Image 1 (tube, rainbow, N blue to C red):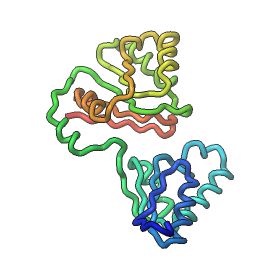
Image 2 (image 1 turned 180 degrees about the vertical axis):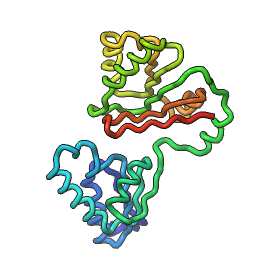
Image 3 (image 1 turned 90 degrees about the vertical axis):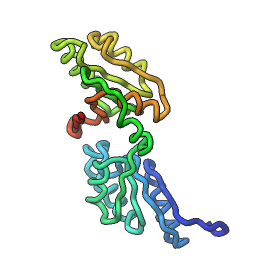
Length: 215
């Protein structure tokens, strides 16, 4: 930065040590910096049961963000949490959002006979996938398999999920479909084929929020 002009510094967390480096560089070179939250920091679920660690991280987070110029994050939940920490501007840039593709898909033909639940991306250890599959299996056992589907796109633990279905939740064999990683446009086209869809981010049960959207 001593020899090359830099208009702005963008630091992406996790890991949040990058925020610290960006803040220090911003002070040294008088360059604005942007904090890009891809994951939660002090308000993450991993901090819930560690009071002292949570308080220490809250202190660090507020201190490091004191000279940030702008903040970006991936959803409205993170937006609300970050606004409780700092008064700096926070902008939501959803993962995979492309307005041109969305406009194109608005006119696509949709199915109205099946409720489709979709999960796209990485499943982490704290995702209660086993509990979710158990409850879905109970639903299918009681109501049949013709009215609901679960689509999993690009997950990282395909073998584990398949083993759960084959050994513990056998009623889901014709309900769950697992797809490899696909281009964003292809995934959106598949999701747009249904008239009613849960776009599900599996989180700890205390944080679960569901929204049904329909035309």
